[in-house]
Length: 242
Image (tube, rainbow, N blue to C red; front, side, top):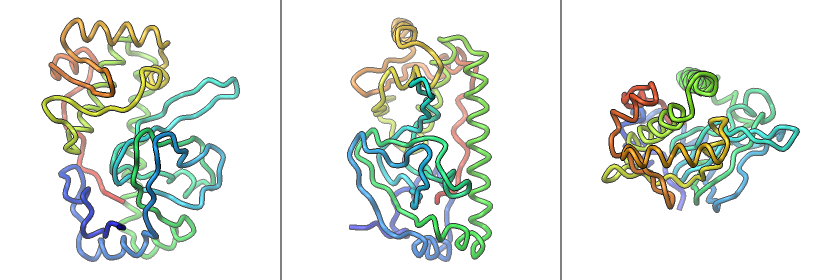
């Protein structure tokens, strides 16, 4: 059954700003349906003129960009609550691809109605601008990681960031987070070789800071891991939900 916006399970999460009844009503009108996809399903393809945009209602995915030589750069990991396809909504086509890595449920929005929706509801236009600014900030931090952090600092930084995001969504139990990605995904996100990434994760495990195996990320000492990654343990800032 399609989830009504007023009953959205994400709306009850502390990570997301509370919407008024009026806001929930016009989001319900903007939403055209829901889509359930299997792991490995492409949601949006680089270069495509996508007709739809999505909010991840549940499940996780990955944003990635392919280079002409076949190499890949992972841009970010998709968590529940992420808005997907804004790039095509603004620029007309996708500059990267998005793929499901678990079973995902997605709220579907019609891109052709996007600008009309924002004109009618300027507060939502501000929310879109806010989300874009947050993504720009994250990409800036990622670029600093690629250029300035050592391998062990970069891996520590990445594990802290995803763990805190999962914690804010209520996905962490007994210091464990389901993280259904591969070491290759992490390596391609951080500009490291697979071998280097594997050895770095082994060091973190040996030092009893963190362990990641069989799709489960366990953080044993978040403060020390954050110190090693030159980052903080501040929870993610509360964000709007599209």
